[in-house]
Length: 283
Ligand code: OGA
Ligand code: MN
Image (cartoon, rainbow, N blue to C red; front, side):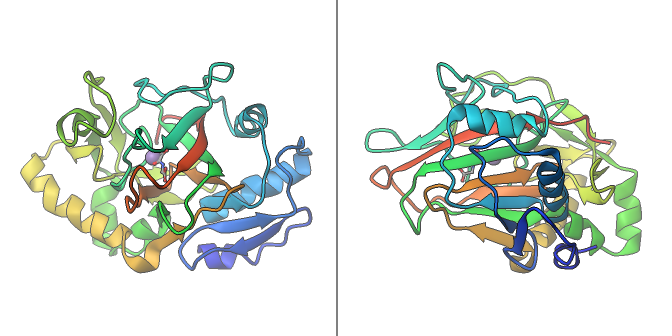
């Protein structure tokens, strides 16, 4: 089922408007400052599995509201490397901030959050409190279709493969990205994982944290990984989100990669609250 086909699913409690042909949907009729009944939540969760990125516009939520909504999907977590500041009274709500004298954290690389962890977060959620419209978009690509559109022999090859993920690049590549000096040892994840909610298979490698396939050298792995990334990030496989104040956007780290467009400087304010909900060990 593609994101487009699943858009035909009927919803009673919410509106689901596809945001691109590849992935993403805008959800209407939901006020995230209010507790959600189970039926509404179930429809949101289904829309999330179908579309991988959900956008709720014009929200006005407190850190407690954001934490509570995130927790419906799984326990909220602090950043494992401590590289993001959390709010004093809500340490699980992290701050992404860009303002004069303080450049925001860089995320201008395709990645899936914390894939170097044993149990990476299922989802991440951002709430836009201040934005500079037209700048600092975030891009997402669909890793279900990136897998499904490969040839059968290549899918068969990848199905049995594992890869190492580690956070080496956080230290070595661009030191200014995050203040990290020590990283945990690498972890091994399947290259193709089955999403526990949708039961669909998704490619689970990313250029920032995946170093190589297990049993193969980095030299052997590189051209294959590069090919997969090129396929995954084709324009047709991307949703590009243009931020507005009041947006709550959540993405599924199990079946997409994202990239924060770095087309701004310190004079273009940006202030978002970020939460993550725990996932499961990829299988
Ligand atoms: C993140 C991230 C993207 C953005 O918080 O994990 O990648 O646009 N953010 O800020
Ligand atoms: Mn990220």
